[in-house]
Figure 1 (cartoon, rainbow, N blue to C red):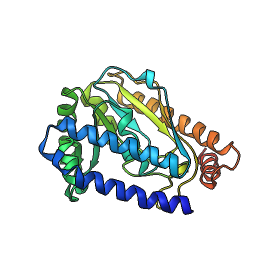
Figure 2 (figure 1 turned 135 degrees about the vertical axis):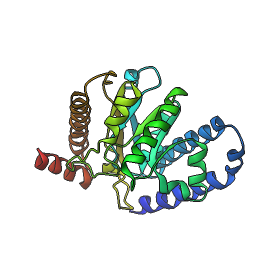
Figure 3 (figure 1 turned 30 degrees about the vertical axis):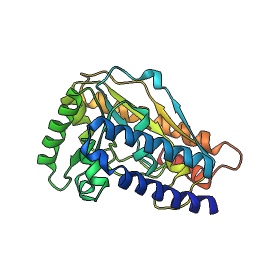
Length: 255
């Protein structure tokens, strides 16, 4: 609990310093700002290891295809919003439009040319999402979307929204499913942080051009199967966090 509190305070201080002291990057080229974003992610991942004892492991990086491609990632924790950034070369994150209004954070998100979605206007929002994603893909960037739209607890029943599959059809690029277990060690709606290993696993890419139902089935099946395996792996170690035990129980209940 003490380590969690120390990291909680340190994380927000470091993030605030990056935003304020790095505000001059708003006036420079986008690539400079993106490098600052990447360094911030690496710093926060390193601090989590030093303070809490939570390590990070990336698996399957050799499976990444040539850019551009669509990243379809599980979303369990706030960790995903910064921890995934250094995994990719030049990611454009799909995010809620209201986040773009937050001082500094929102300003930088616009500078990064992330993709903003107004979720209260579904049809218009989907057209804008596809338009902006095509623009970013034309720049050779990775388009990163959390298909469930919000954080889901590890082991919770999946709730995939159709927006990601519309992107897959429209972009005509491979889709890279990503599984992770970040919610076990950085649980949502909690200030607790647990030692262990956050694993991000790059799964076999799904080639462009598959029929909608087939692509959706393959992507979701790969993600859910891999996440269940990561949950079981985390629960099998000595002194496993209670979140790992709950995740395995939830997976069994969903099955």
